[in-house]
Length: 215
Image (cartoon, rainbow, N blue to C red):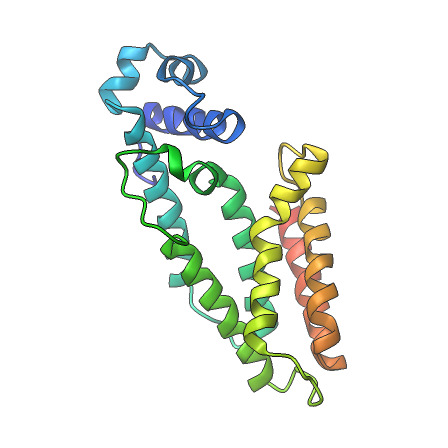
């Protein structure tokens, strides 16, 4: 939350770290308070129930998505694609407990099926793949259903960091982790692109790497 007080911010950061690491059900309010360096009564003053933390973190993640969408598209589909891929991977990793532990939230409204934010994210990626075609960056001889291609690429974005953590226990995300995920994207997408498309996409990924390392 952009307007969170310092104490609320510490609580939310502590809750997010513990929920991600240990799971929602296995994390107590007392543990969150200790991690935030406050008394439990101070925590419950700000967040009376543990589910209130879930709602706050869910709203925070959705706000990040809204800010991303508010930026709008540029005139370069490759730049937009790279931004979408890297930000999506980072977002689902940062708030991974919200997706992983949904069945544990009880009183929080959890509709069946994929969360709306994921449905929208897939639709955005499908739109980007369509733009590759409209810009003449897909091979004319391509015999692939673009919706299947988009879904295959989305699966990489959605599950890459989960896979990496399961096999290598990555902890904090670094650019090298993004870069390896990007290689999987290239393995799927590059054969579908023209030479110009591959060149421009590589340039966009390289610029993203420079921006990340400079930040």
